[in-house]
Image (tube, rainbow, N blue to C red; front, side, top):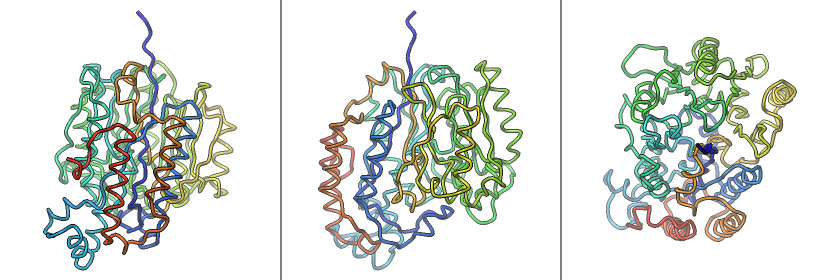
Length: 450
């Protein structure tokens, strides 16, 4: 039997034309700090595209998820604003500016939250399973699920390979933040793996809770994904985020730990009883994957929680390159921090699979609380599955150049939250998205196109 080859493909979100700093994400300290500052949507989108091209040049299959329709008029109508689009924007800006800002949020750029995805080698029916996240803990993100599901169904349309699930029920019990709280480990991408699901709280059982900021992900949501995706429960570990870390700004687990294949890079304050979590992961890796899990712990003395959040060091991507070594894709902020630099220097000098570091400038995204790992959804695919998905979203040099021209043509270089009421911004955004769906060959995916 011929060996099936699997690769990890990164699906990055393009920053939308309404990228702005409204400070909507309570518990995300960077978002809160930069609230009401002017933004630069054009620069933000070009920065994200430059990172995608760098990953492509490292030999990583790189794909694109388009931004969502914003301002999202349907949700404003649903909550009581009426009349023409211009009147709706004016009414919302005058009486409920925070709700207008929520309807304009470009947060779909952080595709680590877009969905949970299980590769075919880990599901009982040997299908790739996809569930768009309900993101119900934050108003501005809860409106994303329908469009995300529609986009994913268009990209992964071949039901011989792909199974789609509707988002989990919205509400306190099944609050789902997507893959930002999930880490898969394996001997190599195509080998059956083990899974770490981090959660902030249980909705049905007593547990420790943060005092200041909300715990977004529930245990019950993660458990539901395991069932729906036909995962082997003996290969799954659930671990609670440390409440003190959430209060320090660790709203998702990908802000405090990151893993790739058989390597785990984590802060000692990532979980409640981190030492036991790591011990259990190592035992599971040996028992099921017959390979050691290489771990690199960072102590609070080496990198205090506040500095870990400020630099987003653990929100780096760790990728396996074409040379079969691992690379750390770190935010520029980590390069500018003496403490984070010492951690990276020691990591590269240690006996781990990570051999190189590449720094990326995502300053516009970072000011809203999203680093390299936030802007990508990792999907492990076989060669056949990669060929079966919609090819128009796979990044190539010509597509990169075309997208740069598209951004330059359509995006503003300055946007203040007060500008969200400008009806011209709605027209500009719809015109841009209309053209983008043609460029990517996706067909109609937005409400205004249907």
